[in-house]
Each structure stands twice: as C-alpha cells, then as structure tokens.
Amino acid sequence: MPSTAFSIGRIPVISSALAVGSCLVYLLGNPARSYSRWCVAVLVLQAIVGSTGFRFQLSADLHGPSRNLFSNVISGAPPFAPLLLPNLAILGFLGLAVYNQQTQKAS
Image (cartoon, rainbow, N blue to C red; front, side, top):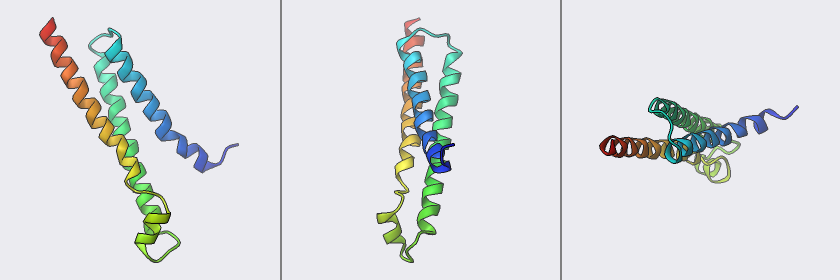
C-alpha cells in the first residue's frame, strides 16, 4: 500500500490533468453547450485543490522544525507553489468566457 504522502501528492496532478483534458475537449471538439458547466465545475475543483494545498504547506511551514518562519519557508514546503492552480483556474474561466462569447456571435 502506498504511503499517505505519496497518495496526497497525486491529487494536484490528477485534478490538473482532469482540467486540461476537459478544457481541451471543449475547445478542440464541438461539445454541447451544457459541457461548459462541467468545465466550470472542474476549474472550481482546481481552485479548491490549490487553496487547500496552500493552507497545508503554510501550516507545515508555521509548525516546521525551526523556530524561524523564514528558515522553514526557505528549506521547507513552498507555500505559494499550490496557488498556481487557482491562477490557472482563473485563466481557464476567462478563456471559457471569451470562447463562449465568440461562439455566440458566430451563431
């Protein structure tokens, strides 16, 4: 059985793959308009995973081995790294909104 840290470390990878795959299907394929709701739900999941990762890593740095927070941040878990997922989710929302506007104008 794999360790808990190894299993938890896969969550951002899986959610990112799900988001990329869903958005690619939407942008490259010709799915129904209701599929955009699925893409929005996946992007919301991305934001939740990234925000949760930020809280976990910040907590690990606050309770790290050193008394100095700066030392824990430098040599420990980078707290701002998981915030890439919510940033990409925001960009995905913007991309979906622009794509929907362009397809509505074309039809």
